[in-house]
Image 1 (cartoon, one colour):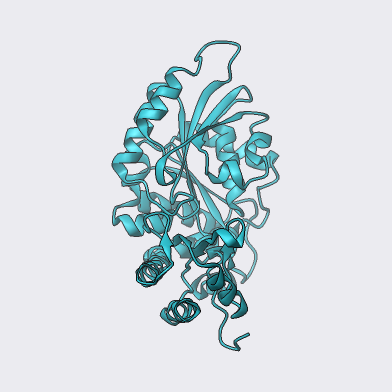
Image 2 (tube, helix red, strand yellow):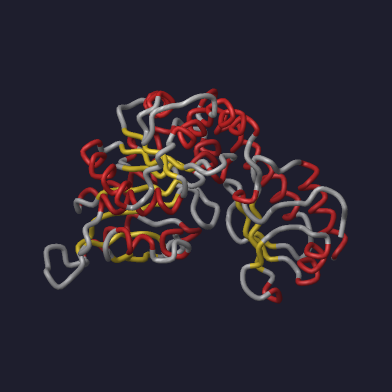
Length: 349
């Protein structure tokens, strides 16, 4: 195994904390402050979110993406309701039943879609035939979109608008799982508002942990009527931190001076560099368009063995013989990391 720096392409969750955010935590740790979000840092953070999205809103810090998603959905969905989402979505495959638990039993209605994205046409068809108002059926209550998708692709503002227009015509609330929201906004080159509330999103799970934070996400309510209920659900769900200022301090610094976008720019740029290199190598196939910081590819089995023997961190999706891998770049990924990875792949052929 090489004594060089470990190449981490397993997950952006595996990256360290960005130094600017660690410094913000150290700075926050000077002296006392009121608890449960009644501190100056939390108030300042929320005002920055209002400026960032150019609207009035409520922004609540929580420590995990799962908490952000499921608590947001619990406000939009009654126990007899249903949440429409992609069959590959994080709330379906990676949250251990938490959406069902926090909504007290609401059903996830799964839809297929090319490259991890839903289509407005299919959504309309399914809702039209969902039995709205029929007591024997769960009632359509919410639409949840994943941005960036679980295939590494990105919804454009017009695609989000088309889906939310359908959802709202059936009186559904709209949620965006934005664990990698920064990567999407950076890649799209649009204002955050353009792909959220202006496109019909009611509540956003605004990710930080995958993009340089220690442990923080923000639940951002553009539909202000739903915000107070969230406060009670967050407390009841054990996600109201007494020392909330340490969560807020991360968010406060994260969105200051576009730090969140600069961190995402590095991750996205390294993914493009990696995708370009892989597309040139024999035996390597990219499975989806590379639009943000996630790459899904098929590599030869001997290449997978070579990467593992060099201590490279990445995920094999299924049997090694199938060759399907997921590679995720982060704010901490360097050009040298990518070039060394590609050299190992090239030499393994």
